[in-house]
Image 1 (cartoon, rainbow, N blue to C red):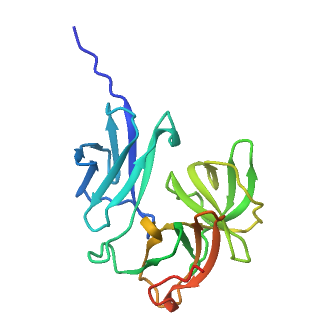
Image 2: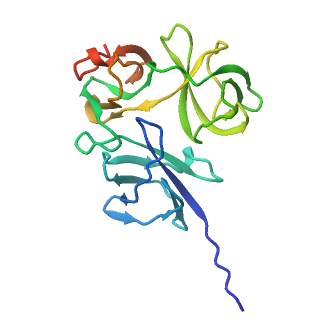
Length: 251
């Protein structure tokens, strides 16, 4: 008589370099919940699964060589009950430069809760064509034959005025040049609006922030920032990082 062993998938974690959008493939990775070390199974580069661990909310810290520690509170009510997944956007360490040098911006802004941005010094590889709210699909215009997008990655549609963007989560590619997004669009997107990947900063207690980008151009490096302060709606500001002297003017 053979015993049947069933494994329940309780969490998937994807490791992504926030400055490049690429998978972090190093195996020098540690997971913790408080002082307890967690031991997920690797499922290829940058993918870790937790089996038969239960689905209770818990804090998690991820330590990856060459990156700042990543802290998150895993809340299952916010995850897909079928396949709970979390994408960890890792920030390269300022001291250990993995994949090239970075420029670091830091400071304190009273009441700051979140900080992210989109680099506008490159042409968008995909642009907006149409949207079907019924099935949450977006058709894209592109010279490429397919949509080379990661699942569970955040992007922004930037209109021609470049003073704000519509934040969307790309869940999957439905077909050539069509993607499924995680929630309905909140604003009207003009045809031809560029699709750009979002770079996430880190905000800790008392509004202390860190934002890093790859130092891979000699230009002004314009970034359209989206930030949120306590008691306020999200705001946007275009900043040329080469001229900002390592601090961001978010007034």
